[in-house]
Image (tube, rainbow, N blue to C red; front, side):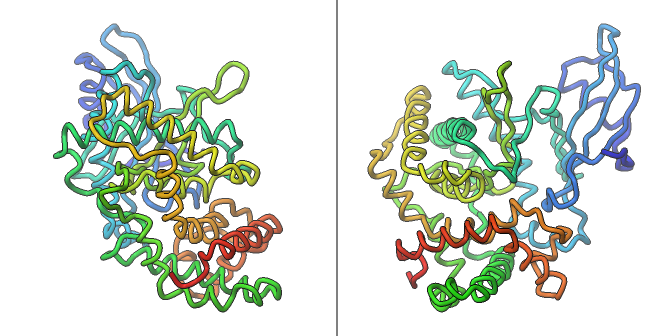
Length: 411
């Protein structure tokens, strides 16, 4: 990508002590700094991501060339700034990188679970509201294609990664409850916050317009789907509700294709993966992550194997909990399936209004206000999400399944 100007505060004098501390090298000296955008327009609305290129000499006098990913809060005058402030996404992610993820990694290392859990944070600066991360690209991590979505092999590796994440977070809560006391109670559908209520309501109206425009869908589904509009967020919020019988952990909260990076072996097969972006981590059921992941990221033939995939995650979760000497009760596999089923309404909303956005290939330029407004431009974009034959086929199949399960009726 094209070179961009460095933030005014990102100078050699600022960064050099941070790198010295991270690498434990008091003689490290920065020679050169430059940057370019780390994401394309429309790929990330939550903040500003910049790839920072650094040339420095280490304590041995050897020249090193490294890249890092700088995550900044979106500008305060950006349309989405107020929304993300309401959900405390920046403080939450800083807490994850500074306190939570390192502790989780330590717990896994103690019991011999090797491999990375996350990208390392070079520094977390709360005054500037920034996180500087190691760049995973030179380590041969890459994203899969969000348009093609994941095949079975990628899906199972992602579920294993989530199981390790969920297990470590559960044991962390047992041993160090104070680490997760704050900032992890709010998800997309939480009661008491309103930002995403407007977004989902507007996108759902776009879905309703499409359904109404199709005679077969209109006659079968429109009336009952329209009646759901006033209760959308409450029904979805129930997916996050937990009681004493639910297995509880820290859910990633936004696990989809773009937020998982894979590493491949010499034969081109995925060997491991890492999660990125922890702005929506929430203490709830791990099955929230499975619903979100299934509803956004799986190829159609893989999605049809949900029971097998839940089982795969369950056994990986059980194995990791046992290795971590978990002191608690894990529900039976049968009960785990029932806990998944009780949260199915979340899938209705995510798969029919978020998934078309995530695999969008239309001609309209993506812009955050197109998701959050009802201007002619915004409505044109929302309607264009349902123009492709692929999305139309997908919506027809999903609505048939959801209707048969009673999920389009008043709850």
